[in-house]
Length: 353
Image (cartoon, rainbow, N blue to C red):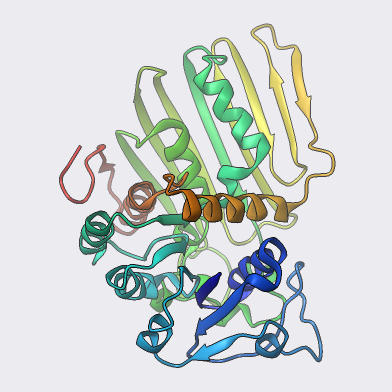
């Protein structure tokens, strides 16, 4: 199988390692590369000293995207900075190539209407890389919600806080995409996984209001803290949801808690523990996911993408789902910058319901 990579930083190399594991020597790797850095990373994001990325994986490098697409790859993995995603995706879609795009789709909505048209017109496979959709604990929360375990929802709280300089020890954090406005950085877009989980569980809120900004001493030109209060109305009740995101917490924190009038549950993604409590407050379910490895999510996601590629099935996270989580994140960023409450609806960017 011939796969093209656009971007081979930390996440691009993770996808490459997993595809090599799943496909073995049948994987033919091509890459459209601009900077051409050849450091090879391990699974824990440390540098494999003395290794050569391109040589060790037998990567065929192309310096023009058109030349790479001329090799007729079965799929492309777009893992470059999110501000550069859409132009690359458009060219790939016009070439009829299936797309796996890392999150978020982009740093704004420019060009996404055109991309949606191209993907739909050609009936292309387009998957957005929200790997937490493949976490067993978060999948269990989704099942509990759909089964009505919580009753009428009263509140939802989600928190993700992690120290930005600890993300990629192999590079200067000030040069990372997450730290730079010109590459679509900032805590709201960089930690968009939680936005996708919110959309997956509850759809879009009626409105939201976000507060925060660049509050720490980190040398970045984007927001490092954001707290968003969202208002939901629907069949599960009318309830508030509070999402906190930051680039400064040490030790890191990542939790998702759902409270209803019939039960509650909390998924701690650092401890990898799901605790579920019934209507009288008794612990009725606990799972520590023994043996779970963070890369298991990425492996399941890769298997899913390859299955969709072979079967023609619809991916778990398609382009429209990626658009909606991006709309939610951009609404939070607008609220933060303009100091206003932002109204949302389930209308997509093409004006369709």
